[in-house]
Image (cartoon, rainbow, N blue to C red):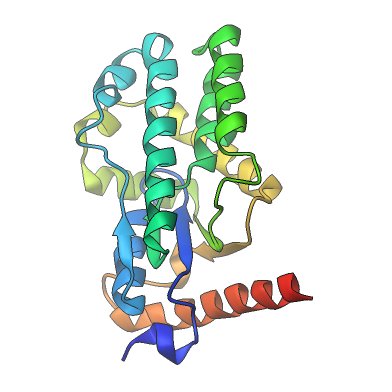
Length: 223
């Protein structure tokens, strides 16, 4: 059964999945796309020319990496809405400035001039009435131990070589960020409350909650 029709989710909806590294964004993206018969939009990790260099030298490459992500995510967001929606998006454009760029600036791995340049560009591109925001942002959350275990299982070399202190810092910053986020409606899901790999049926109650959020928001906007 197409769960989109069962729960009356508009076919033009755009849903973004957010959360720290290793939390299960890609798994959730695929599961929701299959359940709703939506297209997917994934972060292009393998073709990123700065990612490996960044993990080797944060100070030198943090600004380059953030500018690359901003450009790629902006182009992808534009493409999704020009297509007419119907997408599940892996990672949001908002995390780049609210978490990563801010973290590097505060920890001294991005200098003040680069940070000001980046945030000014982000505000001009994204924080305007003309930029299309998602209908819903799904925030995946879990304990630091759970996330570290998932990173270990995934086994990406550049992540395995990264100090645990970095993942601890990111986990804290993600929680602070989502508590202040208000660019679009947010649905928080704890990763211990479902298991999409062992039980495909666990996606249905998630879809039902998504429907409630999206349709409630549309009713409020009409009032």
